[in-house]
Length: 78
Image (cartoon, helix red, strand yellow):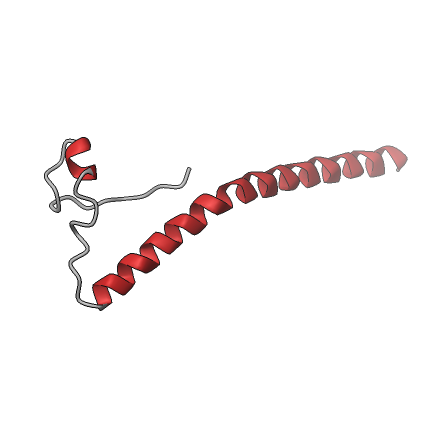
């Protein structure tokens, strides 16, 4: 009985440590996520105001080997 309780307690502690590590990693990503959300909000505001948002960053497309304003841009938070 005691061994079973000790085994369950150890399992609980491992799960708790894993959750703590996940929280730490996610908190580290939070500033980058907030910047991405702010950028998307700014683009949406400008689009709603009638601005053409496709050419806001013309230097990025040629640097990536793309023609400006023709390819969709995806953002991944890793």
